[in-house]
Amino acid sequence: AVRLRVREALGAREAADAVRVQGWVRSVRSQKEVLFLHINDGSSLEHLQVVANPSLENRVLTFGSAVEVQGKLVKSPHRKQNMELQAETIRVVGPCDIWSFPLKMKERHPLEYVRQFPHLRCRNNTLGSLLRIRSEATAAIHSFFQDNGYVHIHTPIITSNDCEGAGELFQIEASSEVRESAEKTHFFNVPAFLTVSGQLHLEVMAGAFTHVFTFGPTFRAENSQSRRHLAEFYMVEAELSFTESLQDIMQVMEDLFKTVTSTVLSRCPHDVELFHKYVAPAQKTKDRLEQILKNKFVTISYSEAVEILKQASQTFTFKPEWGCDLQTEHEKYLVKHCGEIPVFVINYPYDLKPFYMRDNEDGPQHTVAAVDLLVPGIGELCGGSLREERLPFLESRLQRLGLTDAYQWYLDLRKFGSVPHGGFGMGFERYLQYILGVDNIKDVIPFPRFSHSCLL
Ligand code: 4AD
Ligand code: MG
Image 1 (cartoon, rainbow, N blue to C red):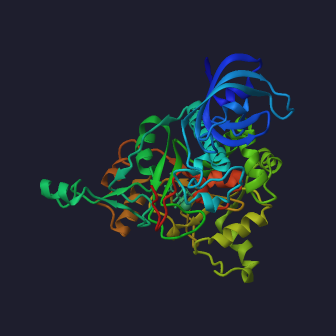
Image 2: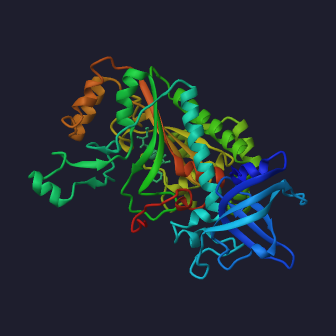
Image 3: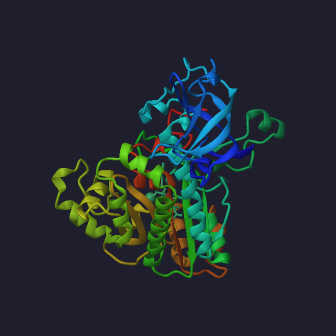
């Protein structure tokens, strides 16, 4: 027999004898003369209907069990489905104890419910669709950069620097047995951390490969229990040498967003539709998203943003003031003000941003060439900047922060063929949240990690 995935069987053009399909049972319906099964193997949202003689029914052939069905693939009499499988044999590969199985047949379980079962929720339609979309989006991100001449770099997960300087670090150490036997306080001799961003390592590589990117896990010890923060999340980061304008960086952010989104919409239409139909708020639709892909994103400066916010000062818990960080409520307001579309905010106060951002040398409201991309329903999706490539500027800033010793190597980059450069990072989970309209970030990653929770 020819082994087919469910997706292949459903999409077959012609009937075929001797076909074998394996998967998990999503429903069992037994009638007097026929037994109907729906099976799914993760290759598509749609299940394959299996039609069998009731004599093939058996005690362990239940919802959730793993089966192998052999038979004839035929045109389905149902209009909704192209093909169905007429079973000749059904083998239960692994039975399922339905009484203790937390998922129930034909039920649309709430996302908060299935979140309790990280080892089983991938068998749920919504998580199934999410994980297929996530996989396609990952491939589309790699293609976008590879097609545009970027070199992919595996930046390290273990590092001795705090790129963002925000102190939200997870420190790592070998177990005490290892350290005792090696007579070391620190395994690496220095304190080491899980990376918060691959940016500094990308800057090294942009100094040789011109355009580089990375796409991997990043870690932040954020204490907040918010619906848009995780302790472990994936970040897409790009760095471009010979780039003097922030607009060029913003163009890459916008192109990345649009290219990846249109690829996902065309490659996973049914999976995306499930979110827009059953999960997202009413205003989130494919049409709306396609419209956003057609129009140019809006740009405003931080100073303009503060002026806009001040007009509506009474609506905020945190009063907007030049020099203060934009709060989530502010970001939401700005996006709404601009028509519920993605908005770039540029040129943030010098004192709010990390040491590596390029000084705009303006004043008295002193800013750096920074950019955040804000999107409806989420707030910040991407953060980026031009980097300070001028040795004297960087030296004096690091000196004031007392970081000169730690960043000698970073200063070196400004001595040995320094070029104007810049880059950005996009939170992959926030991206998925935005295009799919998912309220909680914990539902767009296979195994969420956040404060007080590390299941599995
Ligand atoms: O704005 P951030 O902190 O920027 C950087 O780390 C830069 N070094 C990136 C660069 O220029 N190469 O983080 C980038 C993005 C944010 O805009 C947000 O989307 C996401 O990463 N992000 C998080 N996503 C989920 N959970 C968290 N705790 C996140 N923190 C940041
Ligand atoms: Mg940021």
